[in-house]
Image (cartoon, rainbow, N blue to C red; front, side):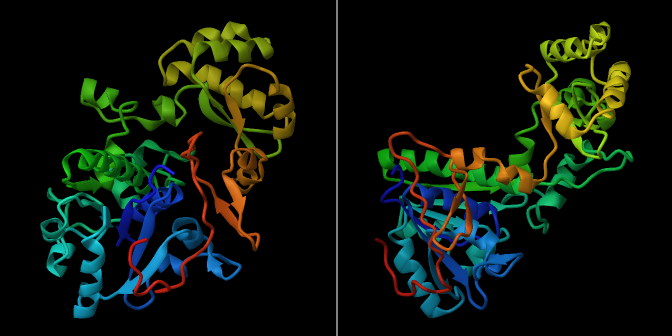
Length: 368
């Protein structure tokens, strides 16, 4: 596997850091999770459980080892340093300044292990006026302005359904860690990586920043393409109270759809910029899709070259056979669901280890 032999110390909690190290573990890295004194990783007992373990914990910590340390104690620090001297990667997600106060910051670790790739994940980064501001995903998205991009049908901001800043910061950190590991193999020196959830989200806004950069004006969400201001990129209710989306704004898809509905005369609306000019076409789609059930529309769309999809629940999504075809839904020996890895190599595929570490199960362990 690609990361076989890579040694990772994970001091992070919850989602961004643990997901990063999970993807590394799936591809061969030896990940030792340093859990805090007391109850350890909070997701061990957070949310729903199945077969004796929290589902969240199962899908972020399988295949890792667990050592519980009090980094404020002499014994805890001694164990930490024994591991840190041999580690290739260290991941932490404390508030800025905490690791330095504990004496385990980058400078201290790099002094005894110059090749360490040390990654800090935080809400707003290690510098800047927000560095010490407490925040989880929703607050970061709100400050970045992306929450305001999504309005409900009542015209008010709607909370996002996924933790985009957690996900993007995790992937940003993974990319940076792998870059630094590649460089360290050439130079023998690692580096320090400062990953901000805020930065990671803003970096993925090229498709929505054009208006504010070009005109200096704020978005009007209901006029924006991504928020339903484009008729071919919006949500529509069906006769049975379900929903479907048109999700491809290219004119070719509009032509194919309108030909099927015998209303090619409306095609010129799809060629206009997003916003009020497209409302007649959006109104037509609303009236049309309300005449049949979602299942009837699924049958009607079959074989048509139109970018569309039914709006399914996440349960319906995981029930789709494609999840198993792509190895994105797997099961352990007890039948507990495991979400697979999205990184799929042909020659050295991931090896999913479904085993969960008990709290402090691997106390006294050294690197493999």
